[in-house]
Amino acid sequence: MFRKILIANRGEIALRVARACRELGVPSVAVYSTADSRSAAVRYADETVHIGPPPVKQSYLNIPNIIEAALKCGADAIHPGYGFLSEDADFAEICRDNGITFIGPTPEVMHRIADKATVRGLMADAGLPVLPGSDGSVGTAAEAREIAAEIGFPLVVKAAAGGGGRGIAVVREAADLSAVFRETRATAQALFGDPSVYLERYLPSAAHVEAQILCDGYGTALHLGERDCSLQRRKQKLVEETPSPRLSEHQRAWLGEYAVTAARAVDYLGAGTVEFLADEEGRLTFMEINGRIQVEHPATEMATGVDIVTEQIRVAAGERLSWTQQDVTVRGVAIECRVNAEDPVRGFRPTPGPLTVFRPPAGPFTRVDSGFAEGDTVAAHYDSLLAKVIVWAPTRKEAIARLTRALEEFQVGSEQVATTIPLVRELLAQPAFLAGRHSTVFVDEFLAARAEPPA
Image (cartoon, rainbow, N blue to C red):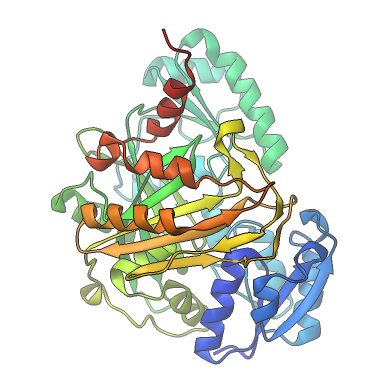
């Protein structure tokens, strides 16, 4: 096991990793920007290191400062959490060059899965179903038009280096393709430093289903069931649940086998997800592999009893997984809801400011992961995630009722800070969600319909 782990992140995931370190008996080091000097992770960790001012490029994305902090405090491993440097293959390689273990996939694997156009081909060769699309990246608008004529409309233009729902544009008519193609290439360059894009058939009423995977260095690759992430706004997830209400047991078994096959095809190591789309008939098609811990991993932990972060650390330390596939059972239903400091009434504008009130819910089978406490300030420099509320119950109906009750209890805000809690409570009561027939466009259509003036 490691001597000391530096956590190259902030907020609730930094606190989550620090707690796993405490249970493993490994000292943790929290790095922080000036804006986070009094954060929950800083208060909890065994050691702290200041790495720069609030802007992320000068702190949480400042690789020299993070490596220097790790070397100075004697950390022999770095946990990147999610976001920031968690999928940066160059950072993982720099860690290795400095004798520090990056808790995640190897740099080689990260390079392999980073290009989503290339990984589509790898998955097709491994026998996974993929949507009709381009073979690799598309270089010109003329080439895009030729490929579009073969796969048909609607289609999506996707950034090959994209992630987090960004760098994706839907094209419904041939007349719009050239302009959208050029715009998406420019967006990809601006967001990811790589203009490469590829084309893929668009499924307008699909469910977004992902399988949680864990792999060690001894040939064991297993899945922990699936999560349904279809309740999302502009491709940003709001609510996740396991198991998916859209899949039959037969489809669920196929998804698990596909996920393990995908992991083995790229020599995956650690915790990650293999993501799929499921059409209205339940047919699955591969979408992408995410090489990091997911925001929504607690839902799977609640339903399986597997401590994913602890297993992730053990695998990185060269240990075998504590679980086999036969040991893993998904019991009941777990649902996770993200609470963001955003105002849905004003176009989801971020609402930073002091948390004069912050009283999370409690009760049976109710978990709250947050990096905030009453009296803290939500900084304007970072993601607006305030907390994650996760519940478990024997049935989906009971789990929805429990989550609704928990959100009713959650008291959070101030004169400045508004949250997405009222919107999520409204979405949980919609017939389409209650029936488990919602798709990835459900929230956007719901908001568009609500915004329309009365006839």
